[in-house]
Image (cartoon, rainbow, N blue to C red):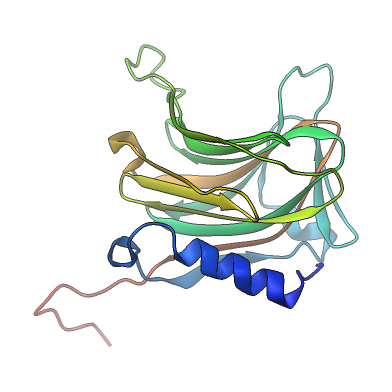
Length: 217
């Protein structure tokens, strides 16, 4: 784990809080995932997709295999509907880092991070194969990200709303009804030579009992 400088962390946190309307932000207080990749066994229970993945020196490294002709993928299993997802990444020669949210039908939505742009996308489900749904770009902005520099990322999904912000870059906000579904995975994708990931923290909303209900003891 490599902590961000204190002032940069505070500035980034304040910037993330300012995105959208406070009244619309769920109360994400329950920590569902808190992984800093300090142990080589950190990803033993994760779903390995394509590419090469390893944990060493306190970080997760993903690299695409040229013969796969597909981004490297590694998914953390988690059942959720709404979530606040934070992590850090660093380009080590790779062309893009992706945060992908999935469910039992496949891809739901993603944040695509390249050195020159950030994209918020609603995906076409993998199944059924004849689904009429199509991939839709919900937002895209220019970015300026450097090789070998760590960047913090915050993304949140709440109902149909999807938001993302990369440290020091313009925020992205989008919405689509197809995002308002139960989800089962948080996945990292790495395109190209290598992307490093670290400090994954996923929080989900607190569960409140309906009015009039008495919580069981």
